[in-house]
Image (cartoon, rainbow, N blue to C red; front, side):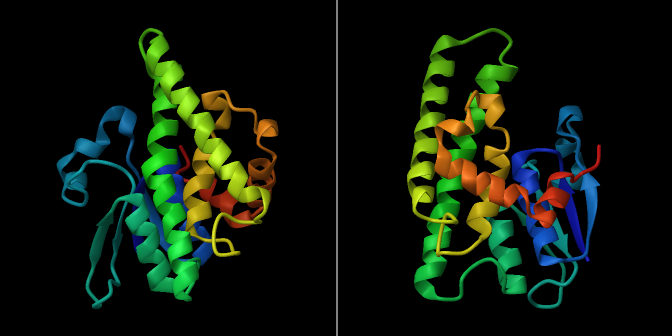
Length: 207
């Protein structure tokens, strides 16, 4: 059994999608980041960085429990545990991992900043809005170019790179992006949205 600590954010939903796609048994623990649950000692003991998501797998690699933080690392761990959604072939594996890192280093942080300045800032900050909305659209362009000739982001197959990126794109309205402007992304988005495991994963946690 995997204990899954999460909230209704793109980073949390990456993991719930992966857990559902792999069919792994898990128990959800809602960490309400709006009420600072992530700073409670019992959660900090699992993730010293006080961020969701985190997991505790009672059946770790050596048969002992293992706690994991950082969504990208958790995805790689679960792919290794199950042998799913990360290619075994060396070239395909690195192709998927580079697009996972693209999400971790670009899509997540930049889309998140766009969310902040458009939705959470106490007053409009024109410089922040212009900077991060512009960068967000640039990153959509990178995705669109890749997906113009590919069904999936990497390796010719559905991988953890797609699962990591999808929940951020699912908030495209938050950063004022019309997917019709990025047809490759839209086709990919619609294809993933139709997957039953993705639909279940996007509903976690139930709050």
